[in-house]
Length: 463
Image (cartoon, rainbow, N blue to C red; front, side):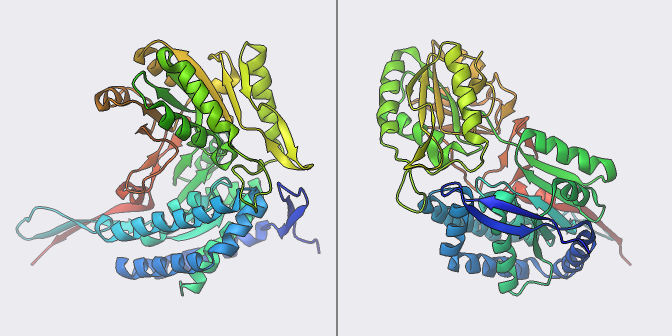
């Protein structure tokens, strides 16, 4: 009898093997989905208030185990421990908001009285939700679907990225500890082929995926081959910022450097390109340079500003982006190289570039690293055209003291979220959504329940 396949994972700082875990075999698909279906039946019979209490208990379990969860994140994907602890708290805040609004969002919609009839619209659960979160924010990209799905009466099969495999187990443990029906939240690890098979299974009512554009296309194709289930895709960004002539330069520089370099730049909503009005261009460059020089690289278990890059391919990919830009005339003002710290880890220096243009790959592709290219513009209109010149459209930010300017530009910006005087943040009361190749659908907010339920019409003729 053949042993089940396994996968190994390194620690991005020590570069030593950190995990060796089994992968789900094809024979394991049936039991997982059968257990999920049974649990979905039990969850669907509960009231929203009962499911809300269940989710609240699960979140409480995770918060109580915050240090172990944070350590697992840091040792498998390299995020500084302080940021990993912050992610546990951010997960709890998002979950708490969705729990708080669940009863109102999932309530029946009554219709105007009609003599002799009882009519209303109910929101019925889908049954089984298959969620594939990303490794860069392994708790946040998971909680966006896990908690709303269970609140709505669905069971969840959670296939985390191999780079953050342990986070799936933490969610599953939390729901077991909260006394959930068996199968409410199951964590699995599997190959892409097995994941595609689960996504296409007719027992799955919804598939959520956070990752790359090619990965999203593969998921969408897999589901469409065998199923009519809906798919939610969050596929990253090439997020632009515009610093207008009247912006607070110190505030903008501090936030933009943080937005580009937080989590080593491995953020779908991280700042990836900056357009700055020519009248304040030099001042912004000087301020960004000062901010970037303060960032420290090192062991993510200690107090450092940036940890290592999670994926082995990342330093080489970022080097390609920098080399392409410099070959076309860009200037590297700070950083620009793959490096180690004391001979350990796969790091990339926080990097500031000027004299960039849209012939360069980093201005058109998602770098997913600590690169901050800055381009001079002469007007709001020029900035707007360049900000929209991308196949991706997740977030954008406008830095100005003029609310009307921000509102005027926001109407024309082709992104799911438009920020003013902030970036790289998320409010769970607002939908998280993208346009163009940044994906389809939305999570969080009152709209985050829409794709996790189906309408059911109640039309009773009385008497």
